[in-house]
Image 1 (cartoon, rainbow, N blue to C red):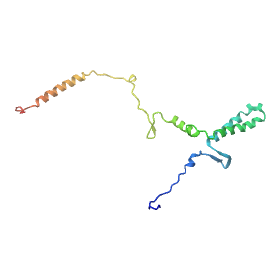
Image 2 (cartoon, rainbow, N blue to C red):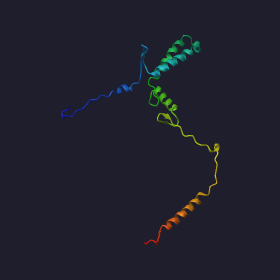
Image 3 (cartoon, rainbow, N blue to C red):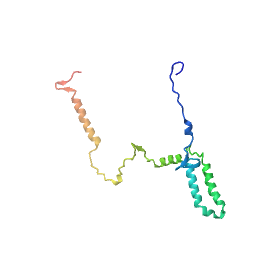
Image 4 (cartoon, rainbow, N blue to C red):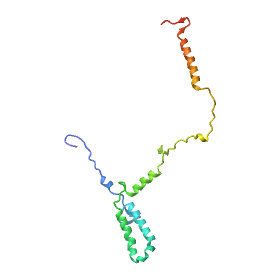
Length: 163
């Protein structure tokens, strides 16, 4: 409470935690040497797998190939630590791209993909035509009858109405 009698609530904002990426410190009770982001972990495991698969191609290097098998995945993992694509982490960018690609082309209405109604193709349908009298001639006849009736309504039974 302040001197003027106003009540206020002190609030704190912890935005600092949102500025740091999601990191993995331990896997199944085993602690990693340093925290890794999911992207780093994927790059480390996949590059190590590729290096292990390609080890027989590097046989001419001798003992240095084992150093390369550890050094190259380590350098790749370290190099993508602060990688951002479109302002997002690579996995989140990939998830956004996949969501865009898998989204229905015509949009979603009430949780279901929208489908345009099927169109009737005239070349596949049979259309039967009947020869009716011209519509405008029929309307003209009706209009003439209506005008004649309206003109007769000006006269009463006993002659022309007074104006």
